[in-house]
Image (cartoon, rainbow, N blue to C red; front, side, top):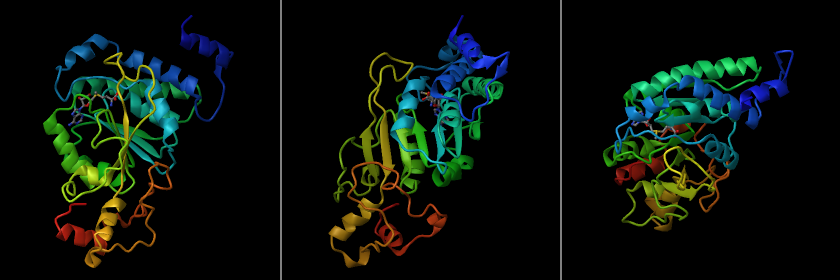
Length: 306
Ligand SMILES: C[S@@+](CC[C@H](N)C(=O)[O-])C[C@H]1O[C@@H](n2cnc3c(N)ncnc32)[C@H](O)[C@@H]1O
């Protein structure tokens, strides 16, 4: 008897699923694994499909890796999770079934994993229904995450962005940084396998690093776990970044330039080294993100792109 059948025997009475709200982590793992195995009926084809050492090289984040990330960062009903390069979409369904997110979404450019993702969605929904478990709304798009049509979703709506960029080439990384990451709102969290700025450092701003992404990022490494991903048995670190625009403002304050002094009322503390929800909360999440305040405008006039 396999794990799924054992689970079914233990948790079903006369074939009837027990009604509970959301799936436990164990049940969700069973459902996600089963849905994956049924959807991805030819794993070799999936691996063969990908050209090695290109930005479309395939590799998956494990269930346990994402589980541990979900436990480490505080996720609330106002969070919107986006996986840039979502492969077969297994992280999107896991987020929808195993976290409090308001919404989860994935964007995948390649045809074959996108086809598998459609099947995975059907299998996942079918099994969640069978077990009578709820999940949050989710969508898996087939397309290029750099496409203009996804821009607002990523830049204005997402609050947690996942990028398994381990194999992404330099040209793609450079576009991700300039077109997407540098435009994100204060407080947006980015999870990646290669860091976008030195990790576990405060990334103090200097005149030289002013225009770098590091000047608006705080970065820490997640707790390590065994077997975080599918493509190697070696350790692959995962990093949490938080967009922190306050330190940029503080830099100018400290330069004592009255023209660039920040009106601090209502802004979060800038000397935090932890990543709690409160400290990384976006001051402008209530829809005022389009409104450029004086400070932002002046920074831009001085060549600093926010
Ligand atoms: C390493 S896989 C990660 C899958 C999944 N996010 C995970 O961590 O398990 C990276 C995926 O990014 C996709 N990708 C690369 N460039 C992309 C782009 N511009 N738009 C959408 N997807 C892209 C690749 O096709 C590949 O499926």
